[in-house]
Amino acid sequence: MKRLAQTIRLRPEKREEYLKLHSAVWPAVEAAMWAANIRNFSIFLREDTLFGYLEYHGEDFEADMALLEADPQTQEWWKLTDPCQQPWSDADRQWSVMDEIWHQDETRQS
Image (cartoon, rainbow, N blue to C red; front, side):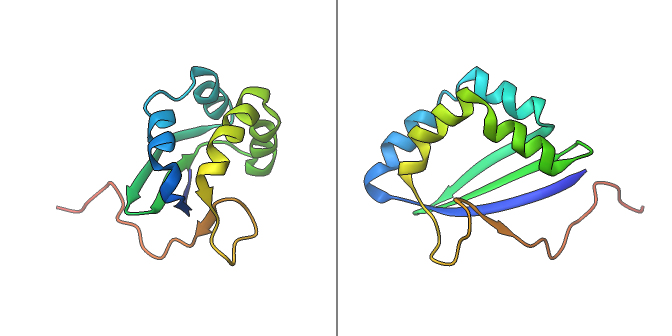
C-alpha cells in the first residue's frame, strides 16, 4: 500500500462552490477512483489550504492514474473543481505531492 498526501490552495471566492460539490461527489467519480485502486481518500480544509490523503492499493500506480485521468466523468468533475483551486507557485501539477517524513504504523507493541 502506498500513502499519498497532496496540497493545494482553495480560491476564497470559490469556497462555497467547492464545498457544495464535495457534499455530493458523483458516484461515477468515486467508482473511477475505486477502479484505480484508490482507498481511504480524504480532503481536509484549513482556511484556504486543502490537504488530500489517499491510500493506493494497486500494483501499477502510473497505469492506474492514467486510467483515472482518462475517465470521462472524472474529467467532467475536474472541469468543475479545478477552477476552484489555485496550485502552489512551484507546482508542476494541479495538486502538489507532499513527502512523507513519519508514519505511525497501525500495529503497536504492548
